[in-house]
Length: 102
Image (cartoon, rainbow, N blue to C red):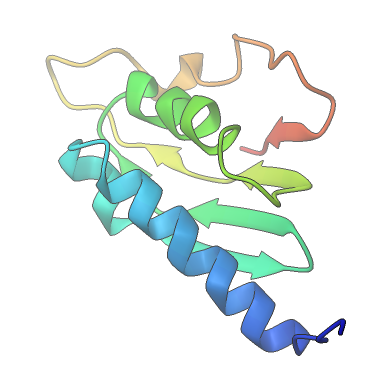
């Protein structure tokens, strides 16, 4: 028997799985991000302190099953001792299904 799951429930399940995965990385900056899922397209938004944390989101979420596309709109909020946020689009992603948006 094939059971159909309403899209809202599937999207919410995806958001919870992404949230759990980011939380399990033990990087405090990743815990405060906003996650929205819509039919396998996951959008991350919010602020992190380093470009490393932004890229970590991309790398980690490639391992979450069911994500068709990741849109990372996370902003890097540089401090005096952190690299400039202007660097955040210099590293290309390997997969065409993932993109960074400024």
